[in-house]
Length: 156
Ligand SMILES: CC(C)(COP(=O)(O)OP(=O)(O)OC[C@H]1O[C@@H](n2cnc3c(N)ncnc32)[C@H](O)[C@@H]1OP(=O)(O)O)[C@@H](O)C(=O)NCCC(=O)NCCS
Image (cartoon, rainbow, N blue to C red; front, side):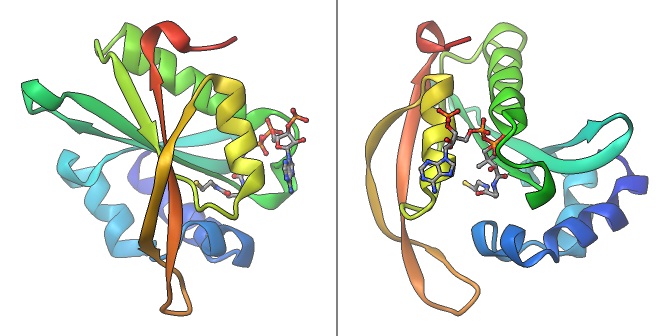
C-alpha cells in the first residue's frame, strides 16, 4: 500500500459488511502501517487497477516463536470468486518462500463460515477457539477460530 491507497481503504473499511468482519479499522491505523512495520505490512488487492481488497501480515520475530499472521478482506462485490483465497495463498507463498517462515496463523470469527472455508482451501487447519478474543463493533466480545498452516501443508 501507498499513501494514495489510504482514502480508498478508508472507503473500503466503511462498507458495513467489511466493518462487521474487520472491526476497528480507521485512517490513523492505516496510516501507521505506512510508517511503522510493527503495525503490520499492508498490501492492497487490485483487479485491473481497481482496489477491491486489503491483506496484511504481522511477523513475530522472536526466534523461539517465529511465525507470521495474516488478515484479509475483500469488498463484498468481489467475494465468492476465489480471489480472497488466491490472495491468502499468494501471500502465504511469499511468507514461506521469500521471508523464510515455517508457520502462519489466521484467526477468523467463529461465525464467519465463508472465511473459514476459504482458509481451509489454502491448507489452514483448525487449532482451537479463542474465547471472547475480538471486540465487535457493538462493543461485545466474540470468539475467533485460531487456524495455522505449516509450510509443507500449503495447497494449490
Ligand atoms: C473471507 C474472504 C477473504 C474469502 O475470499 P473469497 O474470495 O470470497 O473466497 P472463495 O470464493 O475462494 O471461497 C469461499 C468459500 O466459502 C464457501 N462459502 C461461502 N459462503 C459460505 C457460508 N455462508 N458458509 C460456508 N461456506 C461458505 C464457498 O462455497 C467457497 O468454498 P468453495 O470454493 O469450496 O465452494 C472474503 O469472502 C471476504 O473478504 N469476506 C468479507 C470479509 C471477511 O470475512 N474477512 C475475513 C476476516 S477473518
